[in-house]
Length: 257
Image 1 (cartoon, rainbow, N blue to C red):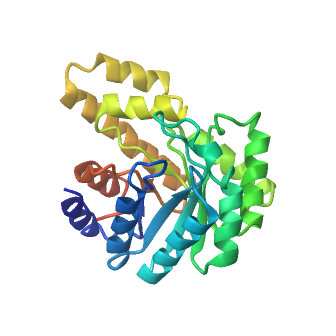
Image 2 (image 1 turned 30 degrees about the horizontal axis):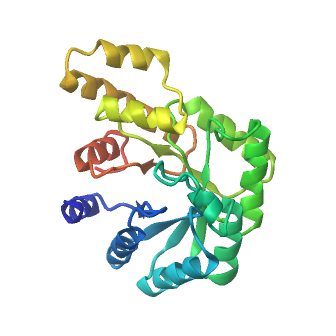
């Protein structure tokens, strides 16, 4: 299924694809193999997390990425899996900043980081978030990709404050297709993203899944258009193996003819 999804995505001529990382015992080897396969066909970003990671193993993965021609690394702290809540404490990295510094110092691969339009759930305030983003840039990060969010104003505010703080790297908004309302709302809850009340009411009032999908996708396309009009350098569409939804957004916002 993944190979079929990848082949269909390539027909959209994406600037890059991004592959999440199976950390904390959830088969990272499979994720790495997928990254290596895709890197031979399109610019690929491989994720790395701090969860349970050692310096030696992380450098080994980076070397594999370099050999495969991987374009960039997305350096993340990550969250410990429910079955092993101590996984983060068991690793040699505690913050994504440490991972950024190591990758930048020991590799020629470009390094990206996460950004949080609504603030990181564990930050004391938004000022701290922006400060950390600047520290990551200073440590060698050259681009950022945002967590999912549902309101353009949050992205615009974050970028504006980041620029005032001296963050010059590209900040790419990540958007989650609302093609499956239950799944989208569940992921929003897990990430701490707020769902606009009007959207939530519309989804809850839908008579069936097809109507909910139509409402959700219409909102997602409108969000994408607003972000591009507000100056976003592009869109990172969270595909989740849902090619039709990714294609619908890419076409709907005008990124693909």
